[in-house]
Image 1 (cartoon, one colour):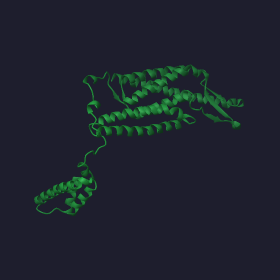
Image 2: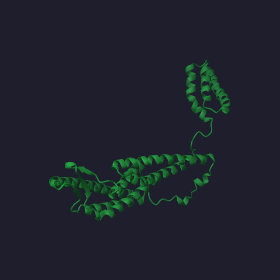
Image 3: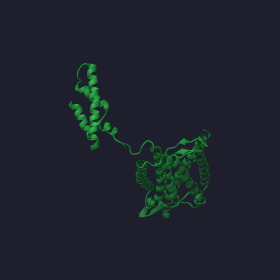
Image 4: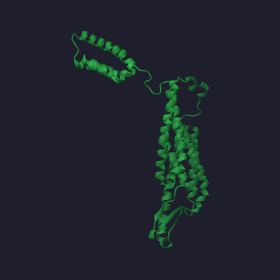
Length: 315
């Protein structure tokens, strides 16, 4: 039967040389047996369409050949849970380290958006290396039959949780981390202050007023702690009691800092030619409104975070 022979010929192309004949003979005998049984039941020979349906049911030659061969997976079922957990932790740590190391090189002479893209590219680049390395390590462990009892060593006494854990998106947390790092860099003058065109090819330079020095270290501490808590959440990919309470405390601290900022007499200074005082006043008023709007948004988000995290704590 031509269809059977063509199927078996195709099957052989997916098998190593030493297995081809044995597998072909075994499968051919099985197929011919099924065809004989069907023909005896129907009282006639099978049509080519019926034989094709039988072969379709058996599966693609590549899939059938795979079932006869060992090691048809990169990481086996026994090792895969440990591999997945190790990969999650390794990639999370790689992302955090990449963000920290990329800050100084990524933001020098770049815009905030350009710095963010550069940091994301570094995370992706380093993550691919880590993915390959962890996969190779576990492949070799399985190939050399590493002792699973050492990988899955555990005690029933260790399976205690003091609080309920809630799922958390690493993608969302990763963007929060990048945003915090970029803000911290800008806050500490690591990102160039933008300048605006002025008359006679002169520029107007924007800077925060001297009053902001009163919140310099409090903002640094809050953002640094936010990065630390974000890194903790990124690695675990869960909310727990510690992270929820930390987020609430940081949100309260943020609201207190905002309350202090809104009492400033002057938010920004703008250096520009003195003869354009009217335009200068308008620009300062405009930027003041922008800053107040940003502070209002941050305050609302912080208040919402306090309420939302409090609900999670009670859940």
